[in-house]
Image 1 (cartoon, one colour):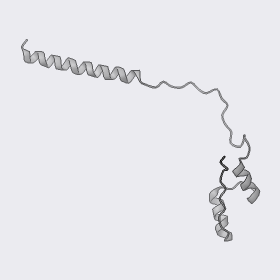
Image 2: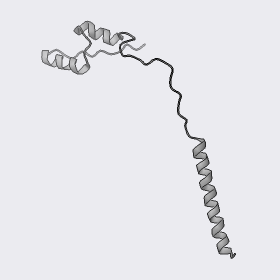
Image 3: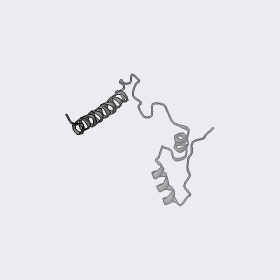
Image 4: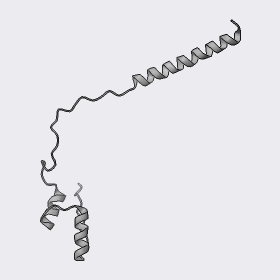
Length: 88
């Protein structure tokens, strides 16, 4: 074997070693699938009314979306009342 061929073979081996190392790192850092949760699924409305939805229900008689409340305010000519959660 001449030196040129040896260098080429060494270069191939180095590339393969680097690729093998990268593949091993990739495999070692993968995320595994999570086990299925044993908690019961949440059903909307099962917790009860929030403070904001209770205030909206008191004002309008039923829980309306923001879009519906904006349309009502526009039709009646009254300013839109925003209901915000109380922080603190």
